[in-house]
Image 1 (cartoon, rainbow, N blue to C red):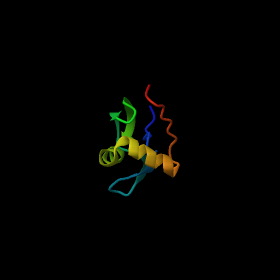
Image 2 (image 1 turned 90 degrees about the horizontal axis):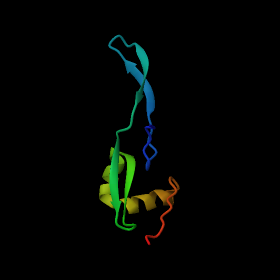
Image 3 (image 1 turned 180 degrees about the vertical axis):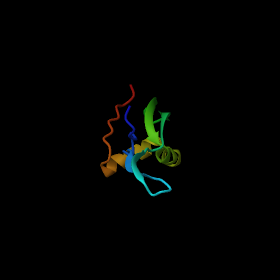
Image 4 (image 1 turned 90 degrees about the vertical axis):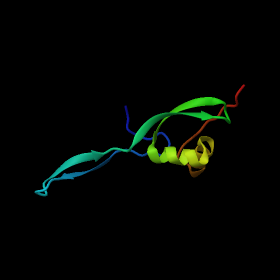
Length: 85
C-alpha cells in the first residue's frame, strides 16, 4: 500500500532521529493520509480517495470537483469525467 496522496502527491520524506548524545539514525516522515469517501454532486457518484489531511481541509473549503479542476489546470493531475447517463 503506497503512502502517497492521490491529489497532492505528498509522499514520505527522509531525515534523522537525533538522540540526546547527538547520534543520528535514518528515519522517515510519513504524510498524514486518510482514506475517505467523497460525494461528487456534479457526477452523482461516490469516490474513495487516499488524501492528506491538508487536502481534506482544502476540499471542505472549495469542494472536490473545484479542487480537482484547479489541480488539473495546474497540470498536477489528469481527470477524466464521464457524463452521467
